[in-house]
Image (tube, rainbow, N blue to C red; front, side, top):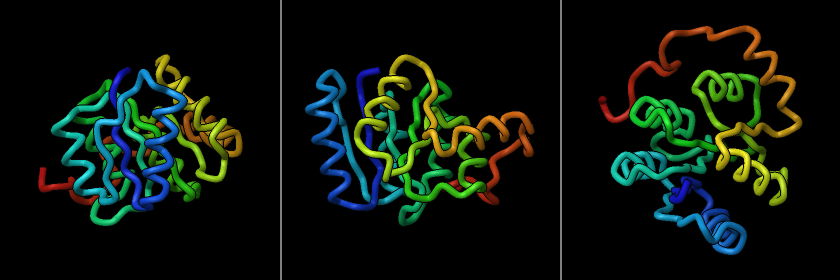
Amino acid sequence: MKTVYIIEDEEILRNLLSTFFATTFPELEVIGMSGDGGEGAEQCLELAPDLVIVDIQLPEVNGLEILHLLKRKFPDIKILIFTGKTSHQTVKIAVHGKADGFINKISGLEELRKAIEAVSKGEQFFSPEIYDEVVKIRGEGPSRTRSPFSRPPFGS
C-alpha cells in the first residue's frame, strides 16, 4: 500500500490526518483530500488510491455509498471508515460493504495508527467498542445481495 486519499468534511480533521500520515507513515503518500463525498468519490475513481479514509456523514454522497461504489470498482482497495456515527445500522452497512476497518473519531491517534497498520498488512481493524457487534453481524450473514442504497451514485 502506497497511496492514500482522505474524504472528510471537517477541514481541520483533513489537515490533521494529512499531517498524521506525513509524520507517522512517511512511506504512504496522501494523493488527495476532499470535504465533499461526490468529489472525493470521483477523485478516487480517477486516482485509484490504495487506501481511502472516509467519514460517513458527508455532503453530496455519504461514506457508506462511497464504500460500496469503490469496492465494486476496485475490489482490492482498502477502505477505513473514520466516523463519529457508530449506530448499529451504519456498522452493519459497513460490514456488509466489506469495509477493511471502522474506527470512531473519538478513539484517538493510537487506535488510528493501529488501524492503518493492520489494513496495510491486509488485516481488518474495528474499534473495540464495536468489535462484538461486528462479530454478531458477520454471524447473521449478509441480509442483501446488493447495495442497500436505492440508486447507484453518479447514475452508474
